[in-house]
Length: 193
Image (cartoon, rainbow, N blue to C red):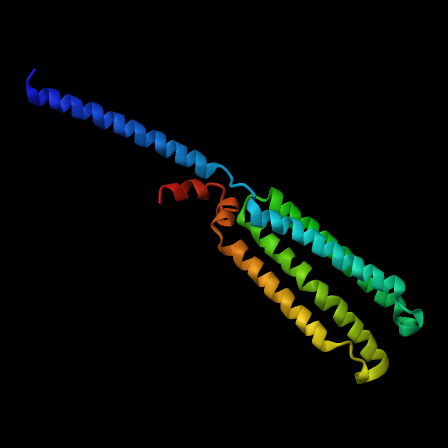
């Protein structure tokens, strides 16, 4: 055997070992990418905030119903109570759907469901009760009935900012893109890009 032949055999052996190492690293990357990312701090925080917000707002709505002066609305009291009870129940149901999508969701469809329920819970809790109360008061007493529109607008603006920030995080974060891919194999394909 001459020197060139030994050198060629050694190069072939090195290239085989390097190819094996690269294949092993690629398999590890595929397994890592195929694994679903953990919930993480921010998604975990959202999973706690949504039900707490929904229960707090629902409790406040139930409280308004029971302490409401029956003479205040007179004939409209039953309609008001039914609408507020339905709103509070739908907010709690939306929180349940959002929590399920956060914890058990596996596709981008679940991520969109989280965003929709977030907006329903956060903004809907301000708009629906306010619209109902103002509508009933204006229908009953004319244009003089006002319920502190400045406080409502400030609360609504805070709720919209809150929901916008969470929506931006959910739709833009790398963790959410990997945790809720468009298709189940998408996270594996990203490794090879």
